Image (tube, rainbow, N blue to C red; front, side, top):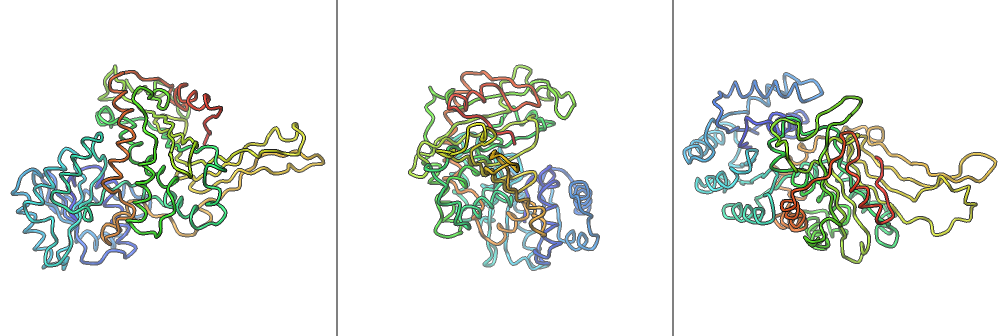
Length: 486
């Protein structure tokens, strides 16, 4: 595995810990090797020492010296400018040397963990050096980190550049959300249980809410957030993927083409938002100074490397419709933001209220519609809200939750998302990766909103530690609904 941008945060915080855990579980062959590339001057030993320190910092469990020594013996580092051809000539020679010394058999996975602005240059140089094809009958694969462009036009251009040197079957666009156990469990919940799929449609579902809430601010990522905003950072990739898994039709098989084809159908069915009607379907928010967990925190405009007059969104709320037979007239409400009251990612399916209850009105005051909640993080699990009789001599009916917690239901610890995805890259299974038309389809839905916001240059404010601006509440109140409190 060749990692471009190897001196960066992602390599130390996510990639190497995931690879170490795979090695500890004996899921990597002894021949496996990691080659890091970036401009920072380092020796092999210095690179290994840096990764060991990061592993101890970011991995909660203890690091085994024996596992690390075996794993680290296959870690190497090449300093070089990823824009220059000589870097790739040196890389090609080094990989051939590893083939003969470690027996890597000409198989290469190139991981683009560098700045997205370097993606086209890296891919072009790989192609020119002939590294886009495996050596001696081996394979060559390209792993591309998000963001996949900044809008539809740039995404189409990036896909065109990638496909100029790599076949689509070689390209693995990674979104770590798809590696999360509870995100994958949306599919298991729907298609492995006979009781859910028959009611997973407009006849029974009133609306769907998808929430991706973070209690932290932008921290040291102010400069990045000024360029991206919550729409590009969270919604275009993570949230749209969760929407697809929630709304898709059953695939004919759990293989890459079947699953990804059904996800693309969902994106094609999402009703376009006319630019002149954006304010009826979308809310843009930004956190101000406020209180989170009893501590006063800065507003976004006060964060480091942020324009004091910035209108960048740290919160997004959307109302979308999937115009097909299954979901006709069912709104999908989406919200994602920073500096909210708690960290929580969930999908909530709210069903229609019972059409008639024979009980006295006073006896059903505490009764709410049935809601099925998939909690992605934290407290991973499922919750089903049902009506039940309150113990007593009367017949009072109230809502209660039936909960499944993954932590107590299964003895196995859920692997980190990158473990699953990196292993799938090596096994050549692209099921949980994003196809070119998926990335473009998500941009096609969101482009009118982004374009409108860039022209209007306005943002609604919300105090840190609250659930977003009032306009987000109004988005649902106009439909006679309200946001859940996770």
